[in-house]
Length: 305
Image (cartoon, rainbow, N blue to C red; front, side):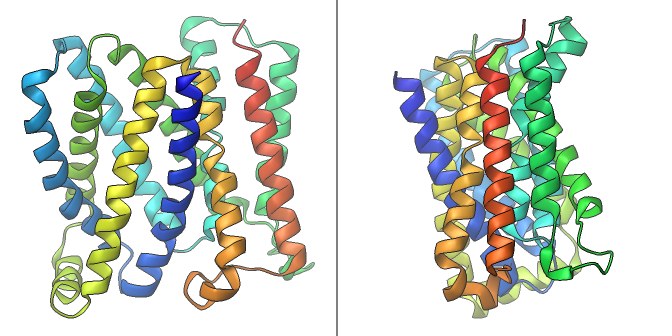
């Protein structure tokens, strides 16, 4: 089916984008808010031009626009949390946990719409949570008491729940709005939030330095942003064509792409991304990631009642 191929494309591209979301701020930023601000400043005009171009050929309703704005606000909050956490957390540990978001979509359906979770789905929840714990283990810390990174991962789990809600809200919005229009409005809200939350004297001074002396940083941010735009358009398109739970399951595989990319590039860029690429650490990351993906696939394939 077409939506499966589109979702796979989105997952692959976002898995790569996630790695550079770690590399760019680690290499170029002196403040954790600089990179989110640069995304907003570069992404906003690109998306505004896209919106202006598609408005004459698009359709929507007031309720559709309101749902898109809500989805964009949630997406912006999710991105704010993740980009802050990414400054201090390994990408290969962070993004597999982020991509538990289909799990939270199932919870939303259960609590808001009374949809029943089957035994298999509850088992899948345990598998996913086990994966989160496995990824959070840092074997290099031994028995010092700092081997678990659960405290650092709690905000990431929260952001995953927010992303799951954002995607759930997006599905009914697409019933009355075109894909590109939905994508453009959602990302404009995202970029405005990133600018509002991260613009201050320190970050503006940092961005100014980028503009004057670090042209490579701006080129990387722009390239990464353009790839992300393609990936996010593909994700919205896939959601419009297929069941949102199944699409979300496929999109969650981007966490595996991130881990694979980090492992491939690790020894070449480890001085930048500061990833633990010891055999024991890699084993935990791969095992935990597979747990999460298996659990997410089970919970989405079994439906919600």
